Structure formats: C-alpha cells, structure tokens
Length: 325
Image (cartoon, rainbow, N blue to C red):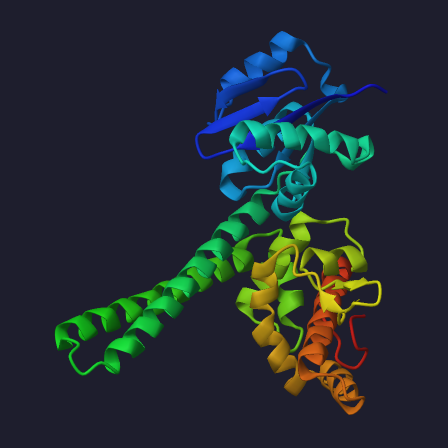
C-alpha cells in the first residue's frame, strides 16, 4: 500500500509541515482548522496518510488529539531520537522548516505498521497534569531550599529577605501536599482508577504519588510487555563498546519517562529495606559484589515489573506469593 507522509515540526504557536514538496505553516490551536482544511483540500485518504511529529509535551497535544479524532495514523518521534537523526542527516542548522523536513525523512526508517491512530486516555492525561505540576514544584522547592541555605550562611543577608524566602519554601511545601492530595483523591474516587490505585498501594513501599505515576504510565501504554515497560522508564540496559579502545560498563538507557524513574527512587530505597521480596534480591546482588548503584537499579526494575504484573492482573499484591494471586 502506498502511503502519504507529512512531517510536522510543532512549536508553541505554529505547525511547520512538509509533505515532500513544500514547507507550509499553520496555527497551532485547539481546532487546527487551517491544517484540517489543507488536508481536505489535498483529499488524501485518511487510511493512507501517516503524520510524523515529535513529542513536545503540551505543544503537540492539539495535533495528537486531532489525529485521534479524525482517524489519522501518527508516528510520534522521541525528541532525543529526532535530534540524533537530524545530526545523522548532516543538518548543522536548526530551524522549524529543517526540522519538519527531517521528520518527513523518518518515513525511510520506520515501517507503516509502526504508525497508529493515537489513543487518548483522559484519565491518564489528568494524572499526567498532576505529575508534571508535582515535578515542577519539586524543582522549585529544591532551588528555594538551596538559596535559603546560602542566605543562612551569609552574614550580611537581611533577616526580612531570609524570612520571605522561608515563607515561600513553606508555601511550596503546602502546594506539593495539595497536588498529591488532589491526585490521590482523584484516583480514589474515580470508578476506573480506584481498584488499580488500591492494588498498587498494596505493594510494600509503593505510596500515593508513586501509584499515581505508575497508573499514568500503564494507562498510556496499555499493551506493553515486561521489556517494553522497562524501556519506557529508561531502565533497559545499554552497552558502549567499540573495537579494543572502548570497553564501557553496562548502563541504563535513561530514555523514556525520567519523571517516573525519579518518583520510583525513594520507594525502591524503602523496598530494599522493607519489601520481603525486593530486600533479599538486593542483598544477593550486594553479596555478589555488585555496585550498590547497580543493585539499586535492578531493584527498581524488579519493583516496576511487580507493579506492572499487579496492574495487569487486577489483583492485590500477595506477600506470601511474591507478586500477586
């Protein structure tokens, strides 16, 4: 089957498209009326059209929803992969027009079956909004805490200034708690999420915010297997080795959702102390002289896979059975 491809570079206010012939510019807004008019004017068969664009968070949201509502197949490119692909093409400059052409060229390295009509999960999008806000507040808290410490160690810092920064830090603490409470309450009261939330929090060391993050991840990618879900959190191993000069250690890719990986850090720290299945697993690795960092990553991966199994099986975690009934 012959497919028509359209590469689209998404920015905050505009879409730059390239169909193999000409670069065009359209407003990036909720309805995408002008872009829709262009497609209808071209009279391209929906089932034979594939739209390639980069995942740019909220900016690509309108385009993703448009494809879902109108049945267009889309191939969403990871930003890191896109940047490397542009370099491979030999493009030293970076403009919206160049990026749209580079995204169009992705048609040569993907298979048509890799593209699909996007699935929009409203619950997952709401949870993602809570999580991104939570992550933003945590960054502000860290920055404020560091600045407050610097002021406290300064002999000449005005007391009123120190007090104002301290008040701001306390305000951020309250806002963090409010976001977690609202996200948790949403999961507990929503008929679709309640059971999953209760099942995930039954796992020793999985708390409210980590359960929210896992539900969001699992709902976004409902048909993933163990290897795929591991890769989505960036816990899949990679090895750098070339000839005789480079003998790098095995590392994790750190691709995918760094936010979920960060949120799972403290639950994993708790699990290696209190979870009766994670703790002996971690201890065995340490006995085998594995680095603590490597053992911690392995424990995080195991905790993620346990959560994935609990979520897929729709049952609570059973300590005596290791994973679930």
